[in-house]
Amino acid sequence: MSISPLTNQLNADDPHKSNKQTVIDCDVHPHVPSLDVLCPYMDETWQSRVGIGKFKPKVAKDGNIPADQFRVPTTRYQHSNGALRKDAYPPNGGPPASDPEYLAKHWLEPNHIANAILLGGNVLGLSAFHDPDLASAFGSAYNDWLYHEWVLKDPRYKLALVIAPQDPQQAVKEIERMGRKPGVVGIMMNNMNIPFGKRHFYPIYEIAEQYGLPVIVHPGAEAAGVYAPDQSVGPASYYIEWHSSFSLIVQRQIMSLVLEGVFERFPNLHFVFAEYGFTWLPNLMWRLDKNWKALRDEVPWVKRYPSEYIKEHISLTTQPIDEPKRPRDLIDMIQMVGADDMLMFSSDYPHWDNDNPQRIFSIFPPEMKRKILYENAKQVYKL
Amino acid sequence: MADKQKIIICPAAELPPGENKLVDLDGVQIAVFNVAGKLHAIRNECPHMGAPMLYGKVCGTMLPSNPHQYQYGCDNEIIRCPWHGWEFEMESGRSIYDRTKGSRLQTFEVHCEQESIVLYKKIPTVKG
Image (cartoon, rainbow over all chains, first blue to last red; front, side, top):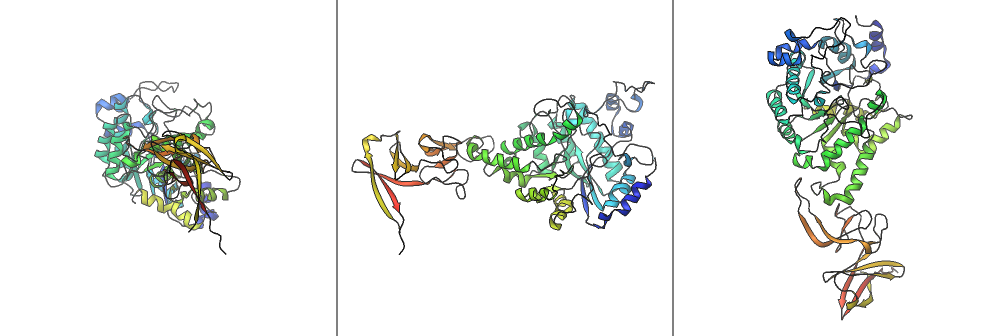
């Protein structure tokens, strides 16, 4: 498939394109062209466990996927219009965001994106898989592939290492192996059915703090497999129901992190929640602060207002940005809780619900816009 | 400096340790406590939602500590609102959650003088 001439024309004629603000995109999802690209990074033991290379199973003629190849758990909900951008297919025929050169031409350059934080599109649900060894091995090979094929080939790409939090010891080893390489800027650790404030995760937090790497959380595991949390009251029936409930999960995780004293124990630890929204912040902060006034003796290690820990230790990416009927309400909401230092632009390219950095902040005050599009991420990822 | 009005509440024997007493002072309710021999008088109205503090639990609290470690302290120095559980220092009326800027419970001077419980209420000085 070739580059759509219409898309190019739209990009060129976009009146908002006069905005030349440099952008850091905090959520871009590269995809493997096929699992076989991981072969150089796995020995035969793991190739056979995953089912790639010479161990690749034969696909039945009717196209049925055989059960003897590893699949990272993914959402069980189908998107009626497809979850990937139709204009993002690279000319070489691979899936969207599988060609670093094309992604740069198609997305980074027209939008003045100086850096893109890579959150592996094939491993968003890795934390939901039930075999911690296979999940860890797959994650390591995936990190190697992204590092060699993307980060080393184009320094605009920065890597969030994927880890399998099912086994914190192996996760720590993976961070030790990769975490100090130039171009590695964070650790992607997606949801499990253990709240993030629990001691299970502390070895990971310890090394994340030591290496100065933020922990990044992105949807993908929710309701995807045995280890991933469901949506509060039980499984959703529909994609729209599932997709809209991410904001519930992140609030629960932030409560756990703050109230278990994670940020007292690891005072330099930083979390990024990508794609979980942010307009729920007033409710979360106000409710936690109110309850803390009454119940602080149960968690005496929470020495300050919970909202203060949230503001200092948590960043949130903007996509999918909420679209109130009065767009200015969004600015009021950000100012209401002082969230302008917490927000970082993200596109979610090549997913369907991506945001266009040239458009979504057009009515924002210039200073707020500059922070969200560039400054906040520059600081969090030390770019 | 404000003058003080001296009000005799009751004979000391009527307020032994562990007991409390409600006093109405010109429509303002004041809760007087004898906490192990030490007297406290506070407004019978939580600054948060107006709960009657007479029913509050006199207690200590968990001191600020390292994560997942508890350390009890300030025994008998704290009163907790009977509704939302906000903690106040009985002596100063300050909030435990924020001693400087948090809501403050109004306190009154109270003593045992000549076998009587005596309350002192400030009388605002009239300028003129």
